Length: 306
Image (cartoon, rainbow, N blue to C red; front, top):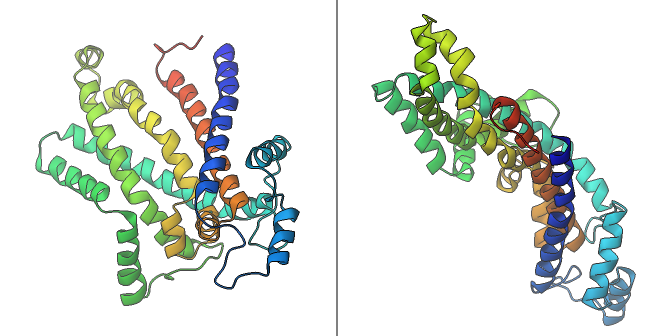
């Protein structure tokens, strides 16, 4: 396991390097620049700004300069947020996105596992069709449609919860958490149902039932862990996506998370901010996929990493 972990960590560096390289050159191919606006700057001022941020250097030289900054864990200054570095903006937005994303994943995992298990135990029944119909609905309707509907009904018509804004209390978290959790819950429910049905038809489950164990004991002790394997595999990138924040959801609910900074940075051609968020997101995906592999091996004794 230790050798496998070290190899995975070693492969993370070239993966991140490839991500940085592709993102760096792609964002600079896009038309416009960080200091373009409706009101053109005087040429001498624009020249001074480009010199200050080294944007007047050859592109390859900018690339290697940026790699040197990344090695020092320095994403550089933001071009649009005055007196803010990208590190500070990520540190400011990450706790917000982390809170919403983690709560959404916890809700999705709990509901998805429960719905998928119940549907599998009642296979082809009315309850099964109803639960899977909900799952298909959750997958089919994008969350940027769900969010305005929740705001309209719960906030505008009923007045139960605020429609947007951010404060560190549960009232401001409920709607964005539910919106983010709905499609993920649907995916987990479908994965869990299919996996649980397959496991329940396995030989070792028939053996456990033949020993006289109750159905609940069979499910809890023997079926649940192997049935969770596809769900665990899915949760790696899903958790990273939820934690870094849905850019649409954060804009709709006016949440100052990483997603909002990313959208604003992309609109303003804030190269360093966009790059910082992309690298941070990529590092999270690599980390969570690595943790998922370890959990996978713990759940499935037949998996051995060398």
